[in-house]
Amino acid sequence: MSETVTVAVTGAAGNVCQSLLFRLAAGEPFGPDASIRLQLIEKSESMKALEGLAMELEDCALPLLESVSLHDDPVSGFKDVDFAILTGAKPRTPSMDRMQQLQENPSIFVEQGRALGKVAKETVKTLVVGNPANTNALIAWANARYLPHHQFSALMRLDHNRALGFLARKIGINPLRIKRLTIWGNHASTLFPDASHLRIDGQPIRMALDMNWYRDIMIDQVQQRGAAVISCKGKTSSSSAAQAIIDHLRDWRFGTEEGDFVSMGVLSQGEYGVTPGLFFSYPVTCRKGRAEVVEGLDLDDFCRRMVRVTEEELVRERKAIENLLPMSPELLLARAHSEVA
Ligand code: LMR
Image (cartoon, rainbow, N blue to C red):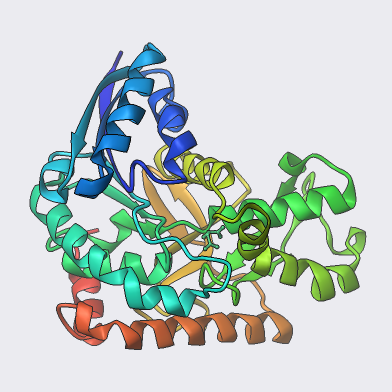
């Protein structure tokens, strides 16, 4: 084994982790040459359930799983970690929207950001999953002193994969053949799945795609997919979220496929005219452990309008949580600019 990857997961006894932990422990995102140390974090009242899950992990006798430790506070749980996956947050119920989650969840991310800044490795990569994920990523990074913004991202891959799935089923092809999809903006019902740069087997897709179906049906279905799952299952997506986390981490670590890009929520610096200082989903490529926004794509008027709507929602979210940021958005941006590349 050439290296050990230490991974902290918050909300470790929650819905998404029921499948995520086993896939992390099997080494899916980090490959066969890395052994895994899991540091699982939960609220005190969920520790018993977490113990049961840890027993199950042990009972799989997974060759890459070096150790599992359980923590009821982020300061011990994030100690020396290479990756932190923040799934812990109160899930929404069928009647809730994202703005309502803003009242409950973001304060947890202040504490977690502070703990990451104090005890995690200085190279730690943090993936925020708990909703509202984009704004929680902003809060976590802002409160994590000394950790650069490019080591934080918000999960958009669930929406990306959902959109790929819809397109592949509609066209009747394997999703692997579809490249250059983008989800823009917020992981919320304003997100914009952009099909204008798609390629199938390297060729532009627009002619093959029924644009009426795309505009009138697919966009809305992707935007509402999380809610649709909740209304059928009575709880939020779990295995598809785990798959998205694995895909996100694998690409972040090993790089995106040549000629393709994926969607990640990263700190906006004004790309495509978006307000700087939001964790905004962009088309990105990953190289050497770092996500870079793909610039220079042409956006027509329709795309620009859709991007504006989701951007405005994120600006409203940031306004609503400004009291959880240790400095003004302007100073945070100055901090981002001064961070060592
Ligand atoms: C999803 O998109 O399925 C999750 O973020 C859960 C939710 O609240 O929609």
